[in-house]
Image (cartoon, rainbow over all chains, first blue to last red; front, side):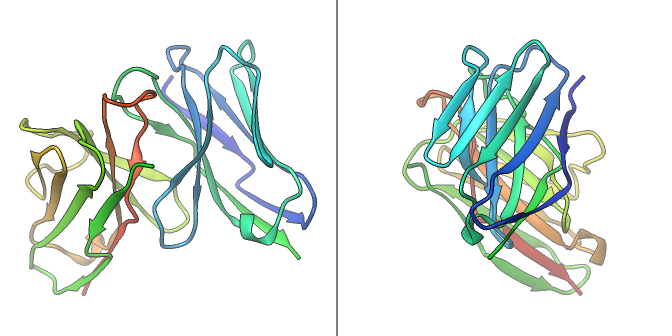
Amino acid sequence: QQQVKQSPQSLIVQKGGISIINCAYENTAFDYFPWYQQFPGKGPALLIAIRPDVSEKKEGRFTISFNKSAKQFSLHIMDSQPGDSATYFCAADRYSSASKIIFGSGTRLSIRP
Amino acid sequence: GAVVSQHPSRVICKSGTSVKIECRSLDFQATTMFWYRQFPKKSLMLMATSNEGSKATYEQGVEKDKFLINHASLTLSTLTVTSAHPEDSSFYICSASTSDRTPDTQYFGPGTRLTVL
């Protein structure tokens, strides 16, 4: 019930293409879904987040699509750039409490020039 | 934005020694701090949650006597790896959250690479 399943494990995309990473959760108590970007040897950084009251959130080239009934959400990176090469983690949390973030297993994204 | 620092960024120690890692929230008061461990190419594993002035809550399987956590102030938490062994070598990451911000987001530190020889 606490799991967040993330796929794919790794992804290679050509520069300029669209990178898509998918996640699914089980616990309907989660109401905050952040995505984190992590570069090698660094801590994760919050990239973008969404709450279940909206189906999509866009910030620059990054878009989260959210399907509440399917309990799925995905990250789309438009016009992917080599600098986007990193590991991406989806996560699930509860908005108003300092509760445990449940992380997905991560996706290693490589953007080919 | 919210900034969290960790010190040291890298540490190499001999087996049997203890190592202390500091986590500081630089521009906000962290009511709660979290300590994670990350193995290569793996996700973050939560070790413990600490609230300022109270004992840390450890996740199942994490030895509280081996990984001592102190959250003495609203801006500082420390993780001490006692009697470190090579299997404790890992990337340790802290995060901090505050109830003063909405949402109650966790802000992560840059991590500390521990190598035990």
